Length: 67
Image 1 (cartoon, rainbow, N blue to C red):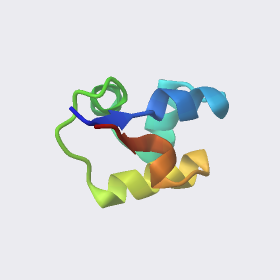
Image 2 (cartoon, rainbow, N blue to C red; image 1 turned 180 degrees about the horizontal axis):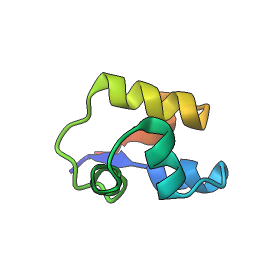
Image 3 (cartoon, rainbow, N blue to C red; image 1 turned 135 degrees about the vertical axis):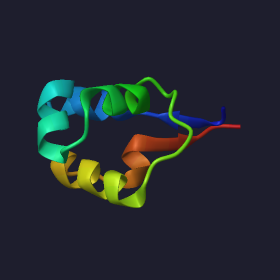
Image 4 (cartoon, rainbow, N blue to C red; image 1 turned 180 degrees about the vertical axis):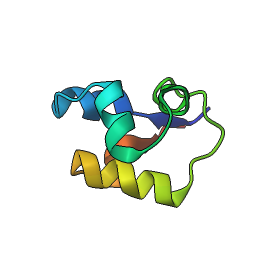
């Protein structure tokens, strides 16, 4: 898939665990894990907004298009 999810990179830069992000974004650990591993087929804008708010980043910091 040409869309790469760099959630793990941003979490590492912010020194935040998956558990901590899950609590702050109010998503289940399994849903965040699916997103983090790149297995998600879609993401809601509200979820992306919440993740960006908590990690203090832009959507482009998390999602990347590679041909």
